[in-house]
View (cartoon, helix red, strand yellow):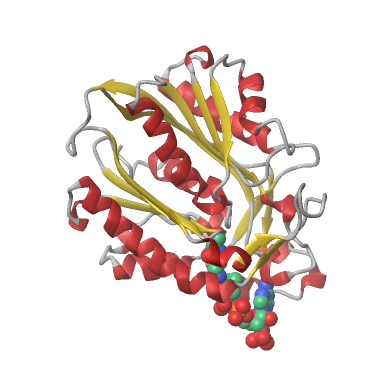
Length: 323
Ligand code: UT7
């Protein structure tokens, strides 16, 4: 019996930073609107030819270096993404190839903004079952490629980036006071399929399509789903909400993050916010935020961290882990 321990982390954003004031003038938006409605100040956009796998590899390399582990030791790569390099093969196999890792298990997982919580859960289960020892869990996106750059209601909200965790198998089932993944809770409800979707795809239109969102409906459900998932995961971990050192939520909107923190009675000093600098990077937002909090010293070994996310599907969930 094994449990999964975080041994490394890393993140990467493209070089091109775009502040709210630098968005195309024809969008008729403003820094004041974007900041007050979302908390976003800027986003990073991938360069021409810079692929999701390129961002993922940079994040993965940082996680491997931090863990002191070579790519040849990685026997599982899960890439959470809704913006794969190609329809197939998986972006995870592109990452495997570029890292010089493998042969090993490699696949993509698509749960949109909840992708990282889903991928972390799946990797943890591979490790628990003894089917992998060293896993890279990556969230990587180039959402800029699926945005309608004439729709100010959506295009100002998203950015590109990647983040990764390196998990290693440790002996035993794990315990709440030990480092490692403690519990997870996942859910989805396809009745909301059309509240947040991309209007293209290989089977439907044979085009890539653009992101479409019923923002207010997403907002309304996000606060409830993000809050209930934290209650559910902490119950599964056998710990009270007060045990949380850091809530690291999906970074879509500062107003959503604040509302969730308030519902959970978690002060601002326990909630990691990165949406101001990255905008919404979908499956990459949580590992980008983890990297930020680890790099600035807030996140320390032994801290109880809960990550939670909600997005298209709707799909949502949370993972509790001891850092
Ligand atoms: O990661 C997946 C999860 N996604 C989310 O969590 C997103 C959830 N939704 C949201 O964050 C918010 O609903 C938005 C930020 C998308 C929108 O905020 P809102 O407060 O719900 O604004 P709204 O859509 O009701 O729009 C209010 C007004 C409208 O004008 P009128 O009809 O009141 O005259 C919009 O046309 O703001 C206008 N507007 C803009 N104005 C300037 C919409 N987008 C913009 C913009 N700049 N970029």
